[in-house]
Image 1 (cartoon, rainbow, N blue to C red):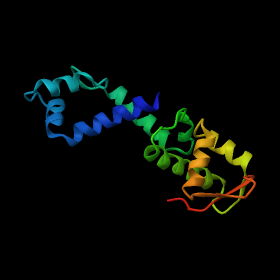
Image 2 (cartoon, one colour):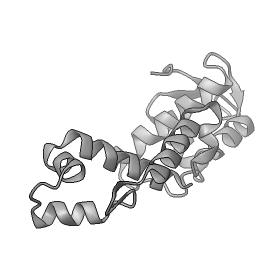
Image 3 (cartoon, rainbow, N blue to C red):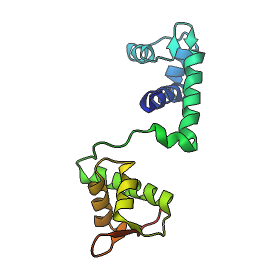
Image 4 (cartoon, rainbow, N blue to C red):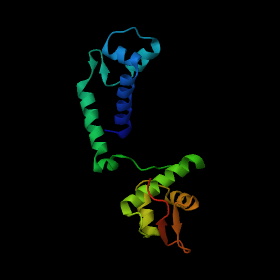
Length: 154
């Protein structure tokens, strides 16, 4: 299972259910325009006989696993933070919030502990930490050795 494949397939199924055109194409033999026909041909969970129960069952089990407490282990760490501040800032803040949800929001942590926790989510620890400090989400001691969450989890 890859998270991208599982979530992509789940998104396709939801799109079919939400779209009367796609739903009619999958459930019945309605008239299909070329765009709809191309979309349906790309679905790996749909064959000439209809929905593939085995593939959809596997996808459902994968989604359940992603919702479990161990689901976080299925996601890859962010190897490259977005270059644009507007995109990166929100991501940095969310990473720091997740870290402190796990470490305890009101607790002060040393820089090595914070770095190790951030590194589980993102490769560029210093960018995440710096963004959070610059945005006022984290405060640090003058020597930069201890950090505390200022803005609590959402």
